[in-house]
Structures are given as structure tokens and as C-alpha cells.
Image (cartoon, rainbow, N blue to C red; front, side, top):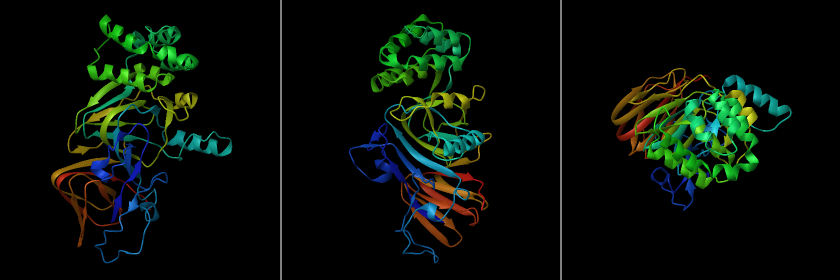
Length: 373
């Protein structure tokens, strides 16, 4: 059993001091993600102030990755605080990740961070807006056809050809500033026409305005009308299998994924964009899975979540268990070893350790996943 602290990521899309409730840190800078896991891009620090078991090495300082391998700790959890849209992105499955990783070792470019699949769940801690999955092609066309210069993309959408539409938008990237500036009016006029399959709410319309304001010369803004829009209420969750495009817009959430940081971006970012590579792994058949409740177990996922609110839960041995204190403190006990974690801290438990009892007067989220030696 390992007491750990999260690794802060200060990406520019984060909320200024947005993670302060979990870190206690006030920096006056964006705070985007707090990582709990063994991924080499941000392995969690072992909390050396917690030593309650007879076998603790009080002189040890390091990270969870010094104690557990990715196979033993196969998930990465994050508290995420988004002030503005993240990149339009997609993640590879196991086959594509391995192939692309091997290819880049030989000839580049360096696209992936690791050779692993990335699938993820987002649980909203506050109302959370996001572009997720594909908007009906006819609705996307209603918006895109109102932007002068994107007639080919609109025609492709009328033919339900998202790939051709994305390629047509990408080909106009040198004119991005002129095209992006037209999007708010295109959204307004499409809404007013009354021919879309569903009306857009104010949060969705505001998301377009924000994307234009934040990325006025980024052609990725023009990808967002191709994506559907959702607002998750607190406690709602969505599972995104590899290949499902998305762009988180704003809000605070708890995110869990297979232990990978692989992202292929299609815009809305200052980072590298690999449209051709992303097109090869996009999934046009699989949709997002929406869930709520205390047990979040997506079909086909390699992990599940259990939400513990003002109560006690017991999780058997045989799986990796990562428990994060979201609201208030929690206590985790295995036999005679009991540890307390404050809000924003976590406890990682290897599969070989005994049954674990978790109690909290507030809110904790446990992530459970099969592990191998």
C-alpha cells in the first residue's frame, strides 16, 4: 500500500489555481491536471510523511514508478480543470499504438508518448462541457455550408464522408483566420434555420464563441462542428474508447485512462498536429458510453470505477486498486495497516495485497483494474 501525491501539469488550457482544492498550491498560473500513476511523463510522488506499516522504509524518497511497473499499475487517473477547449484529439487502440510506436523508432516523427492503447472515462465533478463523438453529418453540413470557402467540406458532409470533410478543412488551413471568424454567424444562422435534428443550447453556442476567441487562427476550430456536444452534470460519466474524437471544453472532472499519454491532435492546440495519422485511427462506428451512479463499468474497458460517498466500501485483492480522496479525507485499511489520505491525495494498492476497506465522510473514487506481475 503506497500513499502518493499527484503530479501537477500546468498546461495553458487549465484554470488559474484550479487544482488548489486538491494541491493547496496557489501559483497564479493555470493548473490543468493532477496525475496519479506510474506513467513516466508524470509519476506520482510517494508521500514520505506517511509511514504507518512496519515495513515502511522511512528513508525512501521517490515515485510510485519506483515501486510498481505499468503492468502492476495499469491505469492513470487525473483531476482535470479546463478553462478553455483542449485540442480536438483521438487516441490509438493497442494495435495502432504499437505499430505507430515501432514506426517512429525507425524513421519518426515522434508522434506517440508510449506504445500503449489509450481509452478513458471522464466523471464530472462540476458541470462539464465537451465535444464528444460525431454530430450527425447533415447537422454538421448545416453549419459548415454557411462558411464561405468550405463548400467542398460541406458537400462531403452531405455525402456523410467525414474523412473527406476533414481533409477539405485541413487543405484550407492557410485561410484559417478568415474561415474561423465566420463560425459564430454560421452557428447562429444554422440554428435560426430550424432544420437541424436538434437545437443547440446556450452552452454549446458559447463553446463555439470561446473556441473562436481562444484560437482565431487555428483551423481546428472548424473541426468542432463535426463533433457532437454534451454537458455532463456532476456525477455523470462518459467512456471514450480509442478512436472516438473529442475536445473537452470547460469544467472540472476526474479522468481515468489506461496508463498512456498518447494523443493525436487535429487542431485547437499549439502542439504538433498530425491530421493524416489521426484519420487512420478515427472510429466512425463506435459511440461514447454515458453512465452515472456509484458503479461505473464501461463495456469493453480494462478498468472500472467505484464512487464512495459518505460511507464504506471493501475491494478484494487480486486487482490493482487506486483510491483518490476527492472531497474530504479517507482511510484505507488492509488487515492491521491503516492509512489516512487528505483531499487530493491517493493510495495505490497492488493486486497481491489483501482486501482493502475504504471509508470516507466525503467523496472518494476507487479505480480497479486487472494487473499482471
